[in-house]
Image (cartoon, rainbow, N blue to C red; front, side, top):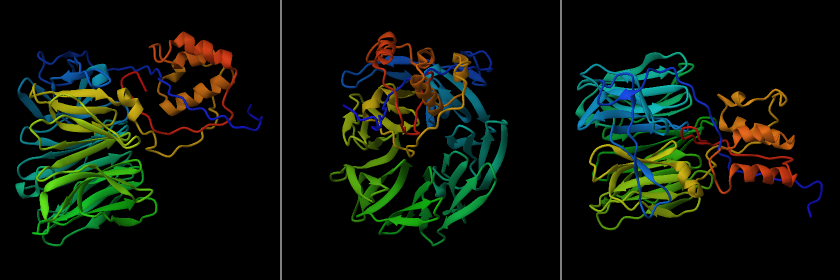
Length: 458
């Protein structure tokens, strides 16, 4: 028996309905057009006996650079074996669409790109120069952020970008050597050179940003091959060198976690994958290499981590930061990434195209603590006048707050708008009948501000 002063905490997994509209041109087949405007993707359903869900194979995708929590990917397309390296597309697998957002001159290629809700940023390179450009999605205006001289000595992944909301981070150079870490506020236009390494033989690796934190590594081309990871807090302005037992490089950050490649200077052929928790300062191996075994290219989103390794029998592996367990996808693959709402890999058998599965299929492995939890105030809505169309344009947190307010006021018709028609553990009717009969509603509550979207599901 609960006392009247008890606080009931509501923990719910709600699949929401979002209604999308589009004013794009009529979608055409990839075989019929010159990859201009909008195309329709072929999502071929595939099965695996050892994974909890089917996945898709999409032959038209050549490469994916980034993804966001709204279910959008950013990448390059191909027709059969011919890649189109100078045309950048927003790819939405759930809607089977790809829409071109940028095209470079034929002498340039798109080398890196990042996508957010408000901005899209990319690097375009020729054999002699590079440019960083940004698209303001609200105004559709493109502007050049920075540019410089390029040569092969800098490496194919230079300069490298990362984006969180309006904050862009990238590494820049002097005398053809990676030497600056630059923070750019795309909205205000302010620029801050946060870290410089002009010492001969040293370079700044690709940065990664999430929330208030930016991380990167500083390496050296010497016989010691030393490499250290740094963490910068945008709010406190504190710069921390992360103490690791060995050398560390290529960090990726999400929420409270940094995942990176680790190695020993005496045996650089063997590389491991480690996970570092910012709040506690603790680290642990999640992939430990044997002699000359190499793990590299870690990525992380919603607590799901993936990486690559040098095996002829490569099978995509994922690791859950919250449950600390590994899952193997029983098929050959390579170039595995976790980006936004999706897990992607390249099929070894197909050779071209990518395989993809939504992270919602891995709900039992997700970590929902990327951003701090917070208490939601009652929304300023008129429940009497509320209709299903009022859900358009709201984010999942806003919809959930409306759900809870409607529940407290016994407005089950509004709840019916929000709950997905698809069956989950029970049917929609059984679910609605059950909450009507319970008579219990939350007095106070808090939720994570994290969410992911796949098409019309959130």
